[in-house]
Image 1 (cartoon, rainbow, N blue to C red):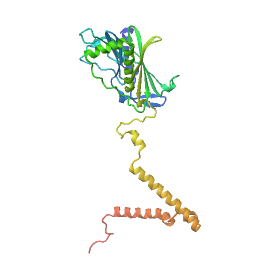
Image 2 (cartoon, rainbow, N blue to C red; image 1 turned 180 degrees about the vertical axis):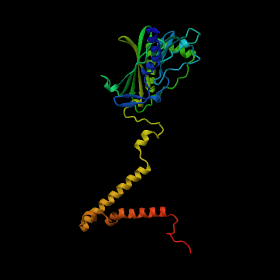
Image 3 (cartoon, rainbow, N blue to C red; image 1 turned 90 degrees about the vertical axis):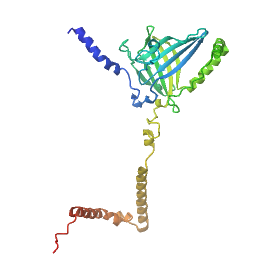
Length: 330
């Protein structure tokens, strides 16, 4: 076999393991001795950005899955979906009120993922704490994910997982009622005016307050096109103890002792208090010293001998069984 053929064979065998090594497990992330588990916010999460350019409305939906690749929808054409291996991806859809056709997909932007079999790129995650980043006043983690390419431009996703003890990270604004054609016309007309733009921005701000996952920006930074997202969740807090959210997890077990633990502690404290108080009383009332200090000192000193006699009787009873001491009936 030629050397070149051997090289390509070895590369093909190593490719799957290399791809796995360049990803990360969302349930086992460790940074500077701290362990983080984002399994509870795994699965697809989306955040949408709406742009008004009358007579068209553009909706870019950014999808994220920290724990695996985004799944395909069998009812949607393959060309209108994120490519296989995507962890972060955007789909831009356009609606034109002058057309009777359904909204059509304009762009599919793979931001980050494992595309070793198609483009040869991988996730290559970079993880750091927010408190270690200069200029950041938040606590949590920053995930920097790679692998995507769009229009010959490398893509990067930067997700700031911010500590928020009051949020799981799955919160999302309720879905608004679909507007009719007349309402849509009013929406487009309002978008053409400054007053309409201001009201739309206010609505977007309200939605951002309800959503745990928020869009920050998508723009060129140095040599990359960078998508920035903020994600508020309690799982990014260093003080959070992993549990099953049902009150019976590790957090509940570590903070609450059981009945027998409390019984043993109280029994020990009671015996200690009895011995200390009794010794103090014997010392002040009778001037006792040594073993005489202990209340019921004679009984305490006899405990080893009493235990030995009791053990001897138990052994004798068990070994003798039903023996009648060697006598037999006449």
